[in-house]
Length: 610
Ligand code: AHR
Image 1 (tube, helix red, strand yellow):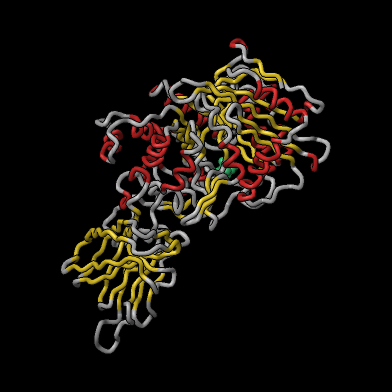
Image 2 (cartoon, rainbow, N blue to C red; image 1 turned 90 degrees about the horizontal axis):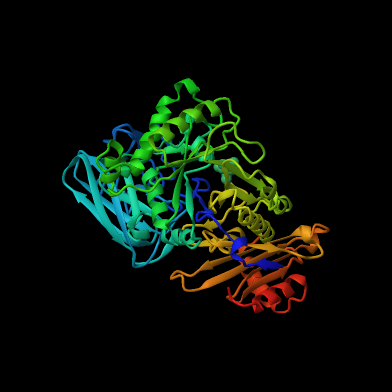
């Protein structure tokens, strides 16, 4: 490997080259990054048509002691469904309630993670014509052992009343549930029951461990909120930003019909912008352009959709006294958010109304916000775009073999016209949901290719980002979690090898080896935070095209003495934990590396510091 470190051959890579794509898929947000512990807090997951689905809420007590139904009596205009709980038993008399009372419980998203010493904020809305005595408890999954309790006693809740309480956990259980019980006969209405841990990232509602996984990747940008989630199978189920802002109790929530689950939209337009800000990442808002998987708004009628998006931009970056900027300010962020990139739809190019709709969005946004970069869904890598755009979106999900070949894809595309935003890429090599090492290596080769072509590729992100193990919709994912645990898949850790790339200097490098067609390498230099030191990282990846079994891969980092390499026999298993062990194997194996790549790496490591 020959690295030319002359200034003339060096090129600065985009500072947002590698980032994140967040989609509400696999319960990434609802039951994931968004720390709300109650699932279906407003009892609306069946929509506004009665009877609404209260799942996963269940009743405690049999039909002789309790009857539960839904009605439209909520005080919240946009989500009218409330729960009506008729308690038939009493503390004395002929129908005595069972010990512990009767009521309802919510298991959260496959169990609530309640941790000893931590505090949880309960908010609920309640109404009853009689005085109430409701016992709130956080228990194990059977409701037998409580780790925290509090009582709600009130003489007059004849009008809807907001009740707040804090619960301190005296024990730990990752499979807890929230119970609301009583032993008093009467009718109680409940609505918008929320339980949030107080300990979220900066109090912004993001689950700390999952947020850290994102922050550790040092993302240059955050694309949100989807994917297909943005489009919907039907427009009526698409993500509409205006329904996801304001007080959480007033948000209607919606059923994401592509990935088939309800979300209360606690993680809404505001929270996505906040997330990007907290990550120090450039937000990229993908909005619905009047097109879903099955229906489309005609371009002649798209104007209301266009206005909705202009309003959404104003919400993000308008003055606090502007119409929508004031709504943001009221939510606690008077300073405008940064918003410099928007994408017009997702994977909609070629649909009957895409171009017509796109042009209307484009001219309205360009006119109102000339600095905003606009991303088209149409692929500009094979043919020049027939419409104006700052970037074009490029998605690729392929086998490891093809991904490895795709590392060279951008070598030969035109150097003119809009640059690529590779906003979704992943190897689909198996169906485990957690990827494997082979896939991660092929992704590494692809990313090395993107580094080398970062004159025409501006940004790239892996997809999907998150997987709640209880609801797998995608073939491969980067971060896998349940209520209390999280790990990075090989694809995640491979991205981690690239965290210094954003804004780094790419050096010209040439590989000389017997099988040069199967080798790819990049050499980058970057400075530490106080700019006092330069670092060089060389990444070399080799895959033999002759036989599957002779694939080899190397990655290295210099001069930090993190030299990594391994040989691919036998195939790694699909378990992400194996990646960690393979990593240590890499460290050992490189010490004995004697082949051409290892020798080259040694030569580089002995060369003077840049
Ligand atoms: O990543 C999963 C889905 O794949 C995205 O929602 C969509 O954009 C792509 O087809």
